[in-house]
Image (cartoon, rainbow, N blue to C red; front, side, top):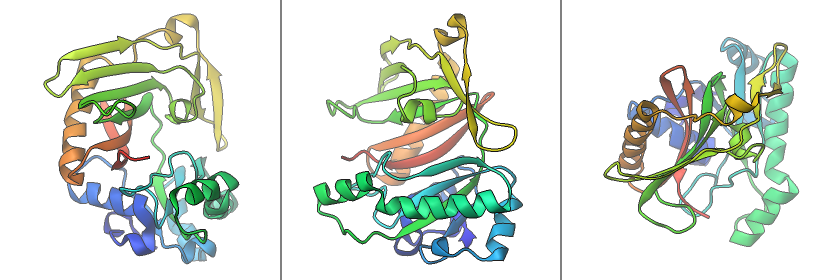
Length: 258
C-alpha cells in the first residue's frame, strides 16, 4: 500500500489511482488516502486494514489497470463502496471492489472495446466526503462534442447522479462563461451516509427537490476547477466533484471517452 499521491504507476495502481495522484501533485483538491496495488487488493494485510481504519469512514473505489484512460473509462462498470466503517466491512469492501473487475457488464464492456478479458484490479481508499451536493462535469459536451462545459448536480452524495436515481439539474456554459442552459431537475431523493455505515436514501420535500443546486459562486468554482483539470490532463475531462458547504472537492478526473 502507498499514499495515493504517490500512486503514479498505473501498471501497479490502476488508471484511477494514477490520475488522482497526478491531480494531487498538481495541487488539486483531491482527498488524499491510500492505494493498494492489484496484488494486495486480492489479499490485504492486517497493517493495511489498520491504516485504512485510521482514516475514519472511507470510500473504497475501483482502479483497474486499464481504467480511466484515453481509450476506456469503465464508467459505472466497477464497484464503489461508500461510508465503510470497521475492520470486517473494510476487508469485505476491498474484496467486493476487486471482484467487480469480472462483473458480467465489465467483461462485456471489455469485449466491446477489444480489451483484455483477464483484468487486474487495484483499489483506491479515500476519506468519505459527506457532500451537501455533488455531481459530474464534462469539459466537452459528452453527446455532441461541442466545446462547452456541461454539469449535472443533485443534493447529497453523487451516487444519485451517477446511478440515475434522480433527474439532476443540468448547467451548460461556454468557455467564456456565457450561460447556455440552466435546467432544474426533480431531485426528490438524496443519498446520505448512514450512522452505522453504508448509505441510505432520504426523501426530500418538493421545495428542496426543485431548488437550484449550484449558485453562481459554485458554478464559478467548478469552472475554475475544470480548467485546472484540463491543464493537468492535457485533454478534455470528465470529473466527479462534491461541495461540503463552500469547499469544493475533486473526486475523479479522467479523459472524456467512450
